[in-house]
Length: 284
Image (cartoon, rainbow, N blue to C red; front, top):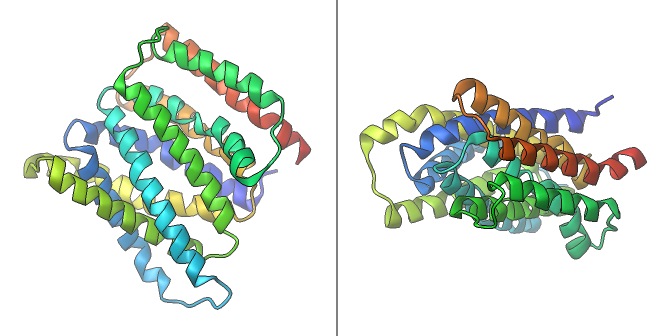
């Protein structure tokens, strides 16, 4: 039986998985910085009206600190992902991004001194083989592949930071601050590095609205609220369902398909993800 926090994380995975459709569409129309800057600012504005209620039990200093750290991470990770979306399918991007599931317990060990199951090492081997197949059974990684691997690392770091701070802060305030910081940094980079085309931006607006309201304001906030009562490792396995949902969404709505190598790689990575989390789930 799912607990309340786990149900919230399940909804998060569904929203994130379907968001890959809109990210793929936007990647063909506007630059990643402009896309992420727009959606994060929109996400922050959606949450802003809910922040006027004061909570004396929260640590204001930690709210600011966590918001800044998460804002920088959220500036890096989604932009790396969006750069890759222009050159890869939604399904492949979803599965490579899901590497964060295996990185979470490793970073938990390094940063928080949490013990790692021996099965994590087996999972890593399976994941590396899966990555090899996802990259066309070649060691010649494309820029999009490297971007997605780095993206997975920063998303794993984001989950660890959320778990560390969430017990002291208001989830909505932490969410809003991270969105505004990530959005601001992205828009600055868009102004410096990208060209603006009003027609293309208008075409990308539906995708910006969906990802800004649902993928950003709703899903990331549900993640933070859900992690108040769910361990980071357990949370990561639930959210890993976004990769499967991304692949199905890309196939159904964008008519994207995976090669045999890529399909085998996805299966291996999914098995690695399940295996890496299974001991924690049984123990719970």
